[in-house]
Length: 351
Image (cartoon, rainbow, N blue to C red; front, side):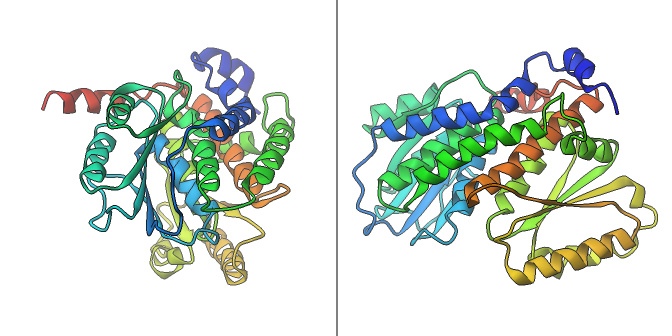
């Protein structure tokens, strides 16, 4: 086993490990922010759709809310990662504008588009132009703490949004699930810390090292978790990763596993499982894992745990976040900086 503690001291100069360890406290703080936030007056019966506008770490909170509420919401919920909102957005739309920095150019553009269409809007941000514009336009703003990389502020982008939707009458029972999830995560984190023997995140990181990770999950509730896992590997470990969902993946990408001899040592697969997966999806997962192993590629089947659906989703997120952190250390990179994104933003600002 590599000396991850020494690697952390050498490469984790901005404390990403500590942020991941402390995530349950951030989740709890996000809960308090959501409970006390000043929200717009909304009649849920009038709203025909919910659109969350955001990118990257500011959008994944919306993805997770959509997944968690997949079979609760009575209206469609769409995550808009673009400069424009969908054509159907109008005065019967609730648009949640999420930008951690408040300066994401695509999100600011989508805000202007949603405003021009007369949508009901509120913002989630730490500061920046989004806060200025929303307050100037007399929209409500849920202000969250600054100073984090957006991907490390998931407790602030996810929990207040979920609580706000509950308070506005779009869903029920979230507070008990949030409470149980915080309590669970505080215990579950002990499975992944540096002092834990047989640490599953360390073992997975070693398997992924110098390989392309492929993250697969069920469509019902774990699709957004797979997206998060992939994104964390890319941003923290500076390593390419890919994701897909059951059952759609079985109707196209599975065929791509045909001629694997030249590539089998370059891949590592993680199949994220949950007890609420559709029965037929669970069967598909087992068959596909056997197919992948038959091609000479490792396939880890990792099962969620926890007292409720939300806790189970975040048990997988904790596993993914720690895995990406340990993979960054094996890659001998600092998990926090994302210099290529900063470069892209600077180049865009010149145009």
